[in-house]
Length: 138
Image (cartoon, rainbow, N blue to C red; front, side):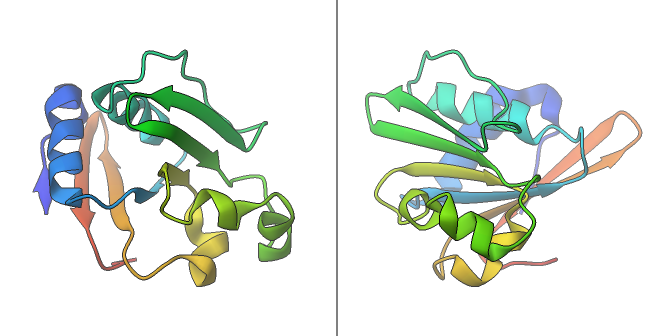
């Protein structure tokens, strides 16, 4: 499903949440600088969080509060293998009990439950196209 560009962030985020039909695990694919973190920040806002959002590139995992419960934001870019992901407790984050947004999920592909929402961001110059789907289309 193709959606609006990143310039329509609040509408885009709400459409993604509507599409998710209650799923709480979201995996995001896209080049460095494509807008994954920016989109996640807006998704967190749409879920009612007013926390200070930052990229978890160095921390690997950030936790936010919302009226719907905890929200986890993972950036697995710096991890080298699945064992490192397991050592940092990735399974507890992606178990579906809380909202969880995962950037660079390829390293944990074999650990993902069968039904996450996949979000692909492709850039073409200044234009960003966002697609969401329930089956990986890498």
